[in-house]
Each structure stands twice: as structure tokens, then as C-alpha cells.
Amino acid sequence: MDNTFRISIPTDKDGYVLLQCPLCCCHFKLNISDIESISEIFCPGCGMKSDSYITNEVIELAQAKVINQFEEEIYSIFKGIEKKTRGKMISIKAGEKPKPSPEKPIRNKVEAMDIAYFTCCDKTCKVKNIRKMMGCYCPFCGVKEYEL
Image (cartoon, rainbow, N blue to C red; front, side, top):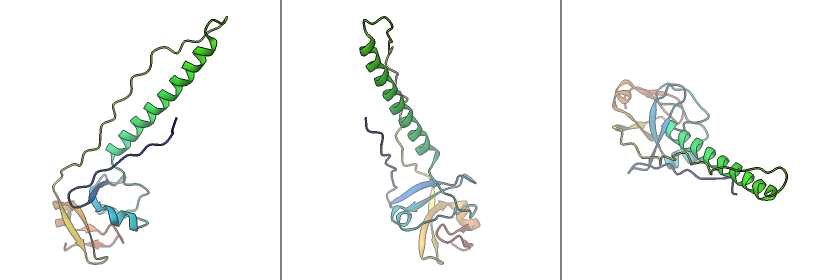
């Protein structure tokens, strides 16, 4: 059985993908090409760096996929043992095949986010309007911009 799987994270119509800061839970969007070209991201909300900005929705889908794959693997192992021990003095029964956990697809959330332009890096991201009005940190260098 293949022990790898892919999770596709959808982008919005402008090519931005939804991210979430694990420190302050701020949601923001970055262009997929920008994500692939930088080594670290700063949260526009708190200005801190994190190792991962994966949303809870992606984490829940990954966990469901891992559980389903694990249960399928264990079941197939016990089915093999059941066949080998059939008719022997001691036999093992695998029981019913486990029902898979639901794997909810990731939907592109339509959140009202505006494009914020960061002059320091000549790049953009999408943030909620209130964050844009209050000023936010550049996700590329961490400088706080007040007039976006």
C-alpha cells in the first residue's frame, strides 16, 4: 500500500491561497508563486514567523486521511492473519472492515479580503479590511506598514 497522499489546497480567482497564523489565528492570503519563492513568512497580524501557516481545515483533512490509511493497513494485516490461521487450533478473526472517517474537501473560503500592497518588498497579500486599515506586517520581511 502506498503510504503517501496529496492534498490540493485551492486558490482564489486571483491565485491567492488561504493561510492561518498558528500564533494569533489571523487569516490571510498569499499568492502561490510568492509562497514558493520565499523561505520564511511573517504573519500580517502579529508580525511573528512560524514554521507552518496551514489552516485547521487542511490539518483536519490530513488527519482523516492518515487515520483512514492506517485503519485500512491494519485491517488488511489482520485479514492476512485470519486466512493463515483458518482451521488451525488458534484462529484470529479480523472482524468488520472499519468505516472510513469522512474526508471533507477543502473549499476556497470566500472571505472579504482586500489586496494590501507592501512597498518595502513590492509585493501583495490579501488581508481583512479592518487589518488593512489598522496597518499590518509585511509577510515577506516583517516590516509594519500603516498606509496600505
